[in-house]
Image 1 (cartoon, rainbow, N blue to C red):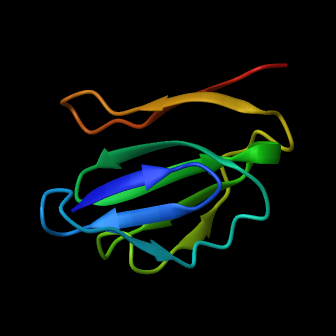
Image 2: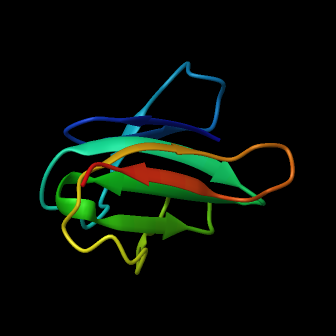
Length: 88
């Protein structure tokens, strides 16, 4: 599964041949996404983080502890640890 983020989240299950938008629950722009140990984690405006455990079909809220601090980076190195960085 591939994900594309921005004003929407779109997913592809055929290596990018076709894409479909999914309901994600973000009220603003989706800034970053990372694949972490079999799940997707996405960050949006206002410090909002959501996760998907089914390839981006459904999304649920995460509580990263950033408050409304804008998250400017999210990544997952090979060890599966999620790293998120905010400004503030």
